[in-house]
Image (cartoon, rainbow, N blue to C red; front, side):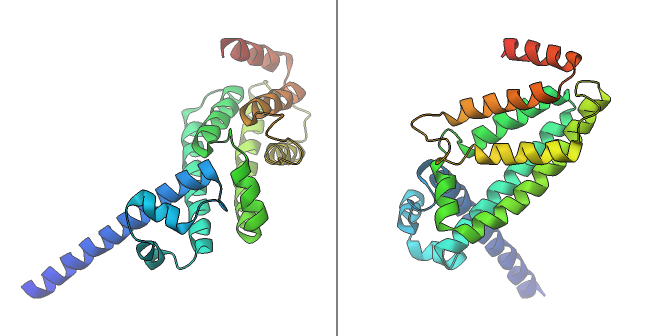
Amino acid sequence: METLLVLKVSFVILLQIIDSMKNDILQKASDMFLSLGFKSVTMDDIANELGISKKTIYQHYTTKDDLVGATTLYLFDTISAGIDDICAIGKNPIEELYEIKDYVLQTLKSENTSPFYQLQKFYPKIHSSLKCKQFDKMDSCIIQNLNRGIEQELYRKEIDVDFIGRIYYAGMHTLNNIDIFPENMYNSRDLKNKFLEYHLRGISTEKGLSVLEKFINKK
């Protein structure tokens, strides 16, 4: 019995070590992919940064495509949890959108949009899968925000909530397209600030515009 117990404990510890290593790889890969690009960073680069062999990474992720897919899912889950936390605070819908925007920008290092361009160009299947997840999350989030804004008389009651939600998602997503918004002409953070203000001015009531103006002046 003692031998069996020792084996069980050893197995649990081994699983914890494996999970810890996988998490370390995901965190480092995420940071490097977002800073340098999904195509630009190699498995050797990640291994060198972690101080491990490339073989160790391949024990957990058999190909770079596997690692890129796992990394994008890790980032999506992290950001989704962060958005849920912001929504749970219960700020007014206008401030909530700014909080979410700032959180996503900070997490994704979105001053640099080229990594997402690389993801779309070189890993189209992963990018397509991520887009579906992003749409479902953003659509749910923005529709809740729109309905709360209408209830609080910050947004106009006659707006088409489903249509506005989709337009908002499409607009935010298009801002990352460097063919339309070249990095040498536009700053990603400024673009998203301008688009969010554009969105809110189009749907806000007089009361909402007053809240928006005060918030912008405060910022």
